[in-house]
Image (cartoon, rainbow, N blue to C red):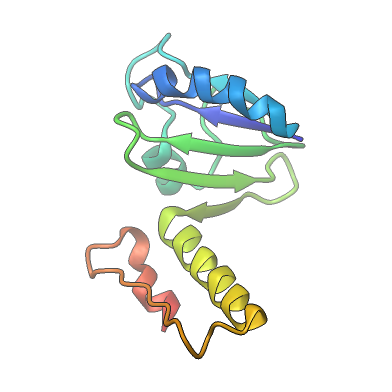
Length: 135
C-alpha cells in the first residue's frame, strides 16, 4: 500500500521522514512531497487542497491516496482520485466524524455500549462546517 504525503514545504516534513520509515513495518510506503524545496503553502498544503479541491502541485494521486498537511502541520486532509477519476476529499472534521462512527460501532459490537458513552464535540469554528454534516 502506498500514500503520498504533501508536507506543504513546512515543518511537517521534519517529522514525516522518521514516521515514514517506521510505517514501512506495517507494509505502508509513504512518499513525501513538497518537503521544503519551495515556498511555504505555495500551491500545496491542506488549505490549498481544501480550497481548490484538487491535488497539490508536485503530487499525482491518480492511482494513489494522498495526505496534505498545512505549513505548521496542525491540519490534515486525506484525498484520492484525480485525472478523470473524480477528486474526493476528507477533511479533518469528516475524519473525526468517521472515526467517531467507527468507535460507536465497536462499542456496540463489544457489548460495552450500555456501560460507555461516546460523544464528539465540534465547535462552530470547525473547518468546513462539520457540525452541519453531523446533524
